[in-house]
Length: 157
Image (tube, rainbow, N blue to C red; front, side):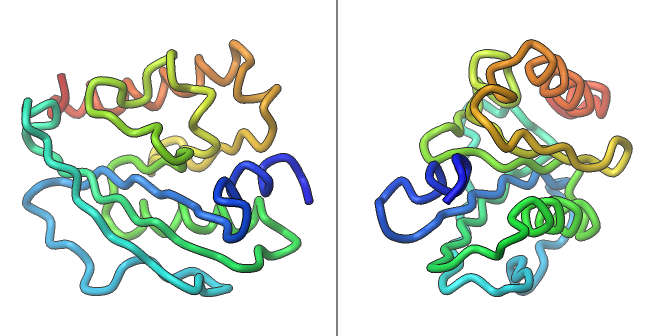
């Protein structure tokens, strides 16, 4: 089992892939949540409440995908999840560890090491499969670049 797979199995049993997709508030949500191949054993969909209107014109949809077994090509699965989220209308999507999401820390440098994948339609997907990569200055810069996509959209403060 590799380092990322161990981190995704934080409960010691199942692997949880948490996808955060930022979509225009006016865009209709897809009827069915993302179900990649191989399909997860469970999918949880949550819409965190943006009490401070950090993203006034956008909404965050969190999809928690639970796997008993992850495919041998985990990077391909994660890249596919990110690409599908963007193809389904997300302005930006990322994969983050449990407990990493907060509206005041959207793609900020202080939580870059808690994000292991990010994607936009303009820049495409990027993965950080190891702790060393996630803690590197290059990854923090990458995350900041994607954060600018939210700012440049004029819909995030």
